[in-house]
Image (tube, rainbow, N blue to C red; front, side, top):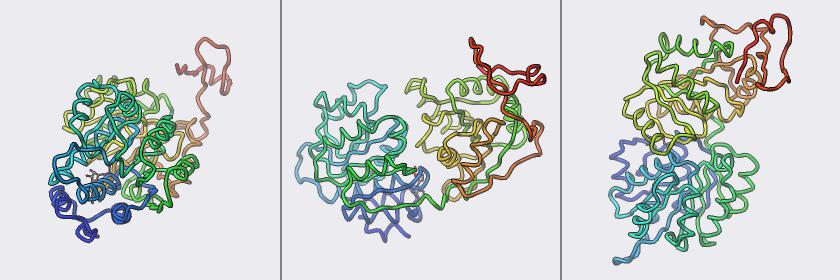
Length: 411
Ligand code: AMP
């Protein structure tokens, strides 16, 4: 569907034209008319589906059409809550570019940076506020934010909000807004707790679902490598030398693992950087910018630090560790194969991660092809490696003579 068929007004259409979007994506096609009709919406959609524009464009139109005449101070009329700073920044960039031909102003608030400049912007007045929960509540407590005029309240990445323990904050924020308002909830997955949350804060919501087709996954060539845990680094180097080219995002489960891999890749001459929860806000942004500006072509990340981040033209995703939550696999590989392009994902599975593969394959209704032609194959009969906890005499795993001889310590 063309954007001009979605009843959007001229300044918004002009901004879309400038962004060179040709057709509305399915989530946009379904959500934009509902938002314009002031309906509450609960939408299942991942990042990469165009969901930000699906709510930003109609919100801008509603705000644009109903502005106070005269030069009264601006009041916050749309509030978007995001779980991570990176996503919040990205949403605000979207709003700014779509609002380019309007007089609507937006700002973004997140923790980990100086609060004073944020106060100055709020004093001047904005129409649209994008924020992470903690900083928003902080500034509200200090009386810099008035939520009495909120007309539309958006919860983005609600499932991640839940994972990160923000649900109580979100409920608190919702109660600070007027009772009569439009609520839009976006979530990549719909666990029961999100459905319950939606029931408590949305009124007669219309459901939009663009996930079951896993359209992102269909444009991705997925490959699975069975490899002993201690050979994953070698396999990674082997593939980087021979197979995987371009801009690559590598996922690891732990911050420690991210750091270790970054060190190893740099030692081998690769240009890599990383983002994880222990890094300061500025170094996370710096790493992301270096990646976006192509100063480095490998970014290593944990799930929480990376989710929601929009990185365009990604050639490959490497699952250095297999995620234990199957939905996480979809989020990870959804970073590649976007906007009609073909992407590639490479998943490294050790013996103790085999059980996760089945649940992932069930979820995506796809058998991930296994690549056997590589130098570090896992013995199909291999059992999980022996695991010995440091400082403890509790031993797990097999205790055969062979395994005792070859035992590995994983501290
Ligand atoms: P999102 O799912 O909101 O993170 O959007 C993913 C990417 O798709 C962003 O880079 C958007 O700028 C881009 N995008 C959004 N809508 C469209 C569209 N209709 N056509 C092409 N690209 C789009």
